[in-house]
Image 1 (tube, helix red, strand yellow):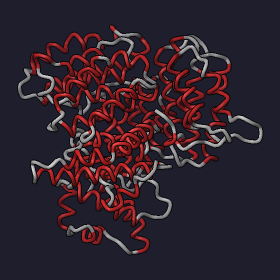
Image 2 (cartoon, one colour):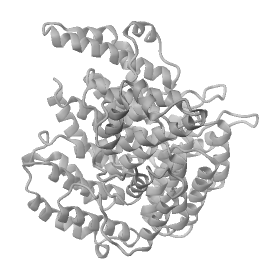
Image 3 (cartoon, rainbow, N blue to C red):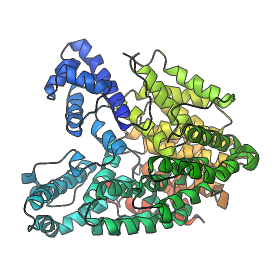
Image 4 (cartoon, helix red, strand yellow):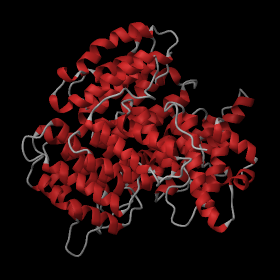
Length: 604
């Protein structure tokens, strides 16, 4: 029976969608060989068909069942399937780390000593070592709960101190990488490890935040907050996070990608008792970003919606007073009060903010009616899913795609994309996003969202290659004569989307080479002609350095790789962030023989 998503803020609804979508992927293969069915899968993971049907309807999947479903779906997936599994990781991303046992992929305790004997050489090795450490801490913690005089957790810390420091560094490096399941899992594991080794992780994270790729580290701190609110180090964690958020505006200035708003997600997730009304430092961080005229539409929208979300979820908050306090901010977002290139996007933020306040809800699940060409283009893109998605998944997939484009609450917009990725039907969704980029040519704020979603999907086929290359060329064409800030942001997003999608580890070298060749003229014109040396264009130089860092290839017979040549040029760029990342890449990504170093061998 077709089911829609009624509440984008409900983790269980999004998880149920992803499970149904994954089972449909497996069902397609099973229907050909008759070896599996939903009932058989249910039995294999310790459920009966009725219990599975209930969970898929309006029930809840326990973490342990999602882990077993991941294992079963991956085992039954057709050959070549790349988007299967990941249900456990989605649950952690959406629900937060409710307890340390929520983390999957732990290894037998008897393997720990051998696994931790030396540094890991690849991503799987790092994640395995992290799992071994977490297994040891989990067991030690259970014993300490029984014997209150025991110091078993401390003993694990002392036994594996050097290994912990090294694994923490490597997890940070993996978390720097484009957003694949492994890099996201590394950030989750790092947050979990930090609940045991707060001082080690805290010091490393604080340093990493100040590095060019540190914008992704905010996600680790959010995970740490979600897991550790009752831990013994909670008061110190609270003070540390408060200090970090007080400096978020300064860190934003150096960020490779402030539009990702991961620091704002942390502010939104701060427990209400940590940031009470009389000293609402989390709200102050959100208000500062919402009022920052130099911030992107995505940031200001996420911050403004976050202020209201926190008010709605706070039983002690006077929402009428908050609504009155937000009225001047809404007025700032009206088209008449905002710069022309951003007015439609900020106007949509104002419209949706009024909508949630009027309806006293935390997030938009219904949309205000607007008679705008861009909304018609959204409708046109969503309609592309017809006949490409199974009928029982179609309503929910359409809803999630719409949220991916027009939802102004950035946390939930990303949750929608994560649910689509976990659902596995990324091909049809990619086609719909490509269609949107063909239809919508003027609203950079919306094209930026579509580009981010397309990069985050990690669906790598020739059609995505062509679409992202076309987006880069189109964005570049808008830079040739007095570009607006929105057009500069669009060029930044197009380059980042290419780096996110095709800079991930494991992408075949020929695909990386092909994509780079398709945008080589754009990259060379931006860098060799020094089109990004003006301060207003620094975001583009940063995105170029990011793309080249993760899409570098081995040296060939002709000498240095294209990425190496361009990074060397950027290493002398007037922007300090561009310069630092380029020099880091040249030092850490290519060895003396000209081979590409595994990312885990890099230094923070």
